[in-house]
Amino acid sequence: MGKIIESVINFSEGRDTDKIEQVINEIRNTEGVKLLDYSYDADHNRCVVTFIGEPGPVGEGAYRLTAKAMELIDMEKHQGGHPRMGATDVIPFVPIFNTTMEDCIELAKEVGEKIGSQLEIPVFLYGNAASRPENANLANVRRGEFEGLKEKIGTPEKKPDFGPNKIHPSAGAVAVGARKPLVAYNVNLHTADLKIAKNIADAVREKKGGLKNVKAIGLKLEDRNQVQVSMNLVDCEATPIHRVMELIKAEADRYGVTIAESELIGLSPQKYLIEAACHYLQLNDFDPGQIIENHLLTGEGEE
Image (cartoon, rainbow, N blue to C red; front, side):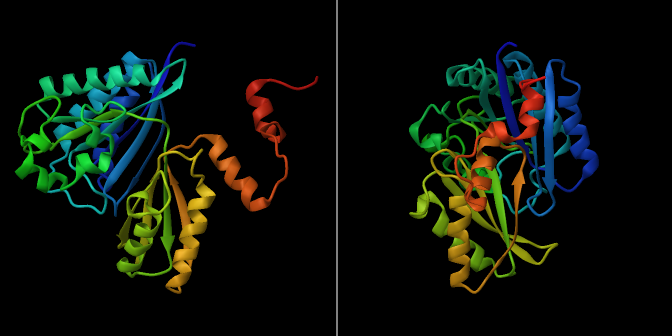
């Protein structure tokens, strides 16, 4: 097996299934990549698609998806609960097998340059590929979202790394970067009070003094009449999922609110979920080799 890189692209459509399928088909039809998962949500109005392959095909798939999203999505008409600045909002590259972070940084720059020059969409490098320290944090890149970026793009603090110094009229802008695996994890609450969700998100996220490696916002789920703490857990080895959940439970209890459910968006490394299961089951000295499916995948075991 050669070098394997993962991309987890977020694009700004979660309601029109025909458009979603047309965009996803660009990955299905890119030779050399494997579509692993995609999910979308009407309240967020956003789709997350995960695929893997060797660097060249993965980069080609990312470019083709961005071109199709530009064709189908008009940011002037887009509304949704999740922060966004472009039709294709963020393109991360993640090292998976036989690859390094440097490989992903190189690919991010190649894809970013191609999007900027051929599609004329402004591109901001972020994460480990960021050209400016402040852009290592995706939230800094996306601050102001599509509407705010229209006014500030091209200024010293909002100068794209590639492409024109002006917003694309329909496709907006895109963040392209390299990062470690993260977990997109949401917790829904038994309340419709958005203020409570925002307060809990502030208590949990690192920027407000909460847990390190946690990014969180509070959102309203109109179709469920509930609110959500929507999170990116950027390093679950340092800050495990169960620790985040326990803090949310404690904060929710302050407001007399209970948790309705939680959800995983996209894919997660198995070890993070095993660690959560071990915590709640209070398993002692658990070995992943005790999972039957792991033996089936590896072919190990006695005849």
